[in-house]
Image 1 (cartoon, rainbow, N blue to C red):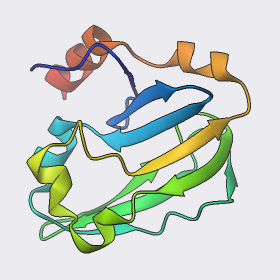
Image 2: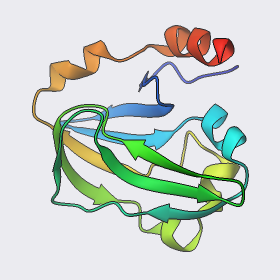
Image 3: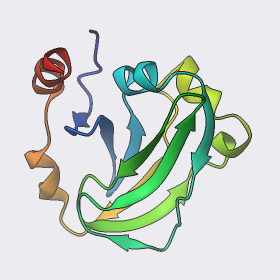
Length: 126
């Protein structure tokens, strides 16, 4: 499994990339492969404050629906509107198609997330 080293990962298969004081969040390639062809990405509400682990949105495929979780405590500041029309962008390139952006209450909370090696070990075990 080839994972970008410029981001962190969650055990629930989200990737998190730091851009200034904002975290950009998407789902991993392994997650999109398990889901199959995505038909819907949404229910993300900018302006909502979430605790780590709370549902930030949903992805649906022809096989299943799955929640997307906040990786840290913070406020959702953006949703990738392009995914509303083209959810398959995630299938085409999961590490390029972000789903939402969150402004963390405490940026140091990302230190508790997995690095690429940690996520790879977790994903291989499941």
